[in-house]
Image 1 (tube, rainbow, N blue to C red):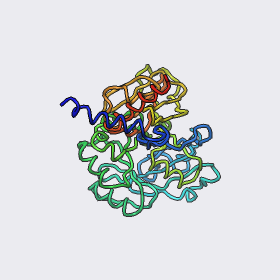
Image 2 (cartoon, rainbow, N blue to C red; image 1 turned 90 degrees about the vertical axis):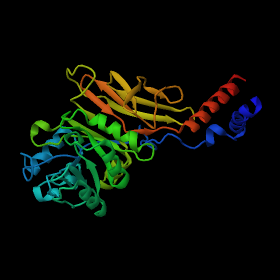
Image 3 (cartoon, rainbow, N blue to C red; image 1 turned 30 degrees about the vertical axis):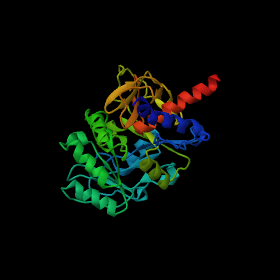
Image 4 (cartoon, rainbow, N blue to C red; image 1 turned 135 degrees about the horizontal axis):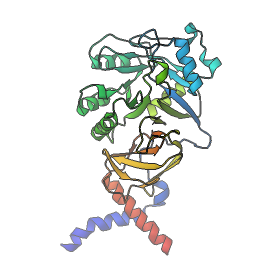
Length: 349
């Protein structure tokens, strides 16, 4: 009986021990939205994807809105007037190429639960958000659920839409500062239903209706190219982080949110490491709970990790967030642990 009980474990150990160049050939098991980014050379482009003009919802002209974001340092901007595509910028006396900006075509579908529609001139007066999501996908666009905390939809409803529509890439986690404080929790609730198969990217947008809203939140897109197609690739692939000036676990006494300067994933040892400036606290979150406060998260030795982890960094000027990483399946984690023990044994010999 004892031999039969230990046989499967012995087989796993033998497999790990005899696999040629285990550490070099083992496939990536942590799904990393920042994979392939050279942090020393990558471009970091500040952007906002929820703004309004006096054409439909805001108080400033299109030109004044563009100028305000240019002055704030944004280089990527989507004007998302209510059910109206304010496009192209040249119709309003602004040339994005001359300004050194990328203009993202879009609008906010607003007669239902509000949805940001991008990279298409599609708009709709529908009162059914599912109709809007289907229309954006059929038009070849991308969509974001705006300020979910305004509505009463369940996490399961959102999870169903994300699993149905591949063009639905994310949700606003911060809107106009921290106007809907439950949105971060909603994000985690939905991730718990969709991960590890379906990541949902978090966004922080100003939902700007007047000059006082400019610069409350932003996204930092990471790309080696500065084109509309590169912006879309970053948005859809999750290669960006986002910040808000209106929430921190530290006293908000001025300053700016932390800036992430590097993310390294070690699949062999099950580690995710952050580099950043201006931070005071670090939280790693999984299934809605904080599981670690270290810059480097040890997946093998940290309890409470579910199918994803994400990082939050805080300063006295705000907070900054990574996108979710998919964590390895339990069986894979066992093999990773065994591999680590074998590596340690070889090192000691």
